[in-house]
Image 1 (cartoon, rainbow, N blue to C red):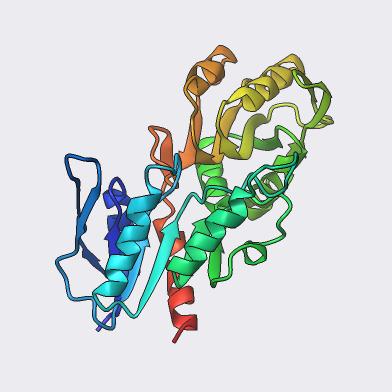
Image 2: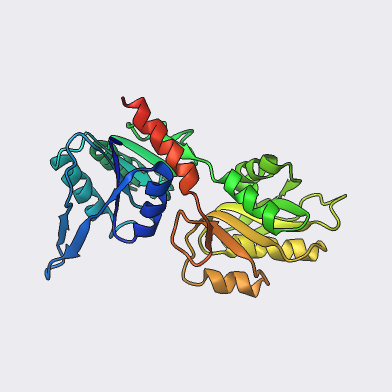
Length: 299
């Protein structure tokens, strides 16, 4: 019998269905509701004895989601699950990895402690690492990181004629290079200079020999959309067409779509790591092997 069962946290049902299909694993339900006082009620109507429970919960806008995630993990273990693994395509609380001013909370460490104490393993997609070289530097449980670059590259080559992969700043360089090299595409990274808190200038890269190419801006996270919009304007001023945008995690802040539209950007896609109308790139087939690797390594 396949020991793995896939359980969706609220809002992750379609994502969990795709993963269960890719894993050829059983998909079981989680009953979740709130009591009138706002507290959570959870129930799993399945025998989890000696099974591996794979909880699927992408964690963008995480604070309301965290209590029910921890409760669900405890419930699965209470019902006899052999191991409880978290699949969080978007992993939050990675930005505060340094105490910039006295008294600030290192939330990346605090969150990692809670997750490491609750789960036996973690699978995520392209975590936003800054000062941490790997997840192992902050998480104490086994983890698998899924790279979205091949999936982005597949979409770009299937959709864009003569693409040029462009990073809007130096931080995007690792994703830009991985996407471009996955399909042998030309690539460039723009430079960003900061002259003050609100004075940031993006400069076009060397574009010699790239006439006739269509730029595709690639980054790991789209939040406000401001960086991509500024980059699109700079590329247009350099004589290139308005770019498409392909990002890993489409967080889309309140006015992000308006900001992109004001820059003339019409085509924006992201992976399904976060729920968004632009989430057209399915990662289930890439996440499934990572989950299997993690489970097989545990015996």
